[in-house]
Length: 260
Image (tube, rainbow, N blue to C red; front, side, top):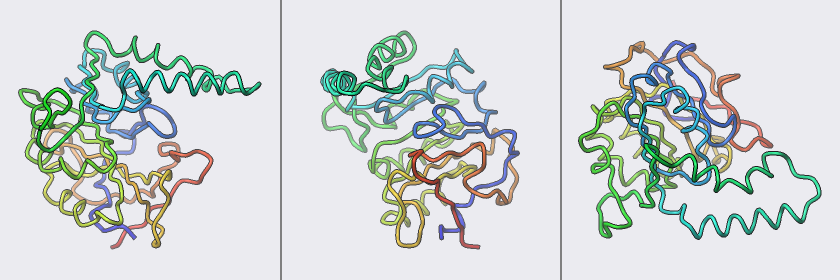
């Protein structure tokens, strides 16, 4: 079972919406933050910006700043080669698979003007200024922020910077990896972070541990000083039907259990 402080605080179910893919790449947020957000900052992009795209449809005045050092020109060259080989090797492909071959075109048209992608790695301390950036620098002189983080275990290095900048953040969406190994660090973060946990979901891509708890968790935190939440834990069952979906759709979603 998950620790009791992993159980979210209660918000009205009608305030929770899903943006982005129904499967991996989609996240649950509180819709009250959308219109009040000036900066959507994404750390970890890969090849899925469905969340960002849907968010900006609802708030086109928001600035998008994305950071991912792995999405380079070579990344797109290698991806196109692999996708093209699949295209000519198989007679039947889904429409999504066919469109994925031209993903780079979507990338070019989406990341322009106020939508920026920086080919930089998020680090605790900068050693190579041209290739690295810190959360502290990114959030400097900014406010009314949604911060979205999926950086494959590096999230633990930057948790102190997130805590220090709590007042600037309307909402934090974060993926915690290797939960069974880093459990105490997540517990400590939740205890020290000023925002309140309002949603949780188990990512089924990486399976479960011996206690049937997910190895990867997606968490959404809300600034309760700006948006009202109830000062008690929710009675929702997780995953929430018609809101949460399995990241890997061919496998069942993970039912979460909490200690009392």
